[in-house]
Structures are given as C-alpha cells and as structure tokens.
Image (cartoon, rainbow, N blue to C red):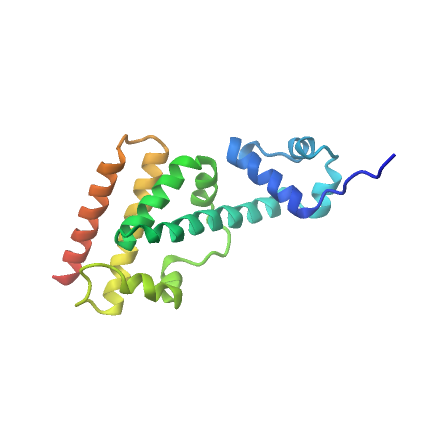
Length: 187
C-alpha cells in the first residue's frame, strides 16, 4: 500500500482559505478542515498551534489578494483613487467572507493607514492623485486618507447589502467625494 500523502502547512492554509471563501472563517473548524483534507486533525495542529494562528495567516493571505487586485486595477486608465476604490468595493462584494475577515480583525500588526502613507511605495500613488498639484505632500496624504476611509465605508455597506447601488452610482459617489475632499483641503 502506498504511503499516505503528508498534509503540509500550505495545504492546510489553502484548504482553510477556500473554506473561508465559501462559508466564512466562523465555519472553519479543525474537524471540517481535516475532513476537507482527508486527514485527521493532527496534521492541522502540527502545522498550526491553534486555529487563531491559522486565522492570522488567512487574514494576511486575504489582505494580499485584495491588495494585488487593487494594484492590478491601476492599469485601467482611470484616476488611481477611482480604479483602486472600485476594485476594492468589487472585491468586497465578490469575496464577502474574505472581506469580512480582513475588515473585522484589528488584532494583527498590519499598521495603520498613516504608516502605509509613510512608505516609499505610496509616493507614486500620491503623485498620481488628480487635481492635487498645488497640495503639499501632507495634504495629499490627508486626501488619500479621507478617500480610503470613505471607500472602505462604501465597500462595507454595499457588501453587506445595506445599500443597493450600481457601479455607475458608486463611481459617481467616489468622484464627488474625492472632489469634495480635494476642495476642502485646498480651501
């Protein structure tokens, strides 16, 4: 009889990721995960000391999926705030369980938005914000911060079906909010 395939940490993470995508992390248990993997729970707890450690890795894997999707969306020719914002909202609606995981958790060391705005990678985003040529770098950061907070709120409401809006409506709302934020900083 051939030896059983070993269950790796990557296999556990990927199975848990798919289960979270399908039904939310609250429905991922070691027993259900073992069932999905065709194993006992022992390999799961060999890979992860506990389910909280697995949840943390799922958080980062989900956040990376969202980030990658938003960064890829920048190539559409729209202003960066709009293309990334629409991509984020679209992902929140399409990947509701993963969005819930990353939106609900504040216990992992992800840094806050201000820390993100201090990173070198963010300079390109800030430089590509339309109608901000006369703003200082700090003012551009403030615009970005306000747009991001507004976009996250819209994503949360739309994904939770608290409001029903089409893509065109959402785009118009983001544009108006952006222009309002820029205008309020300029004045």
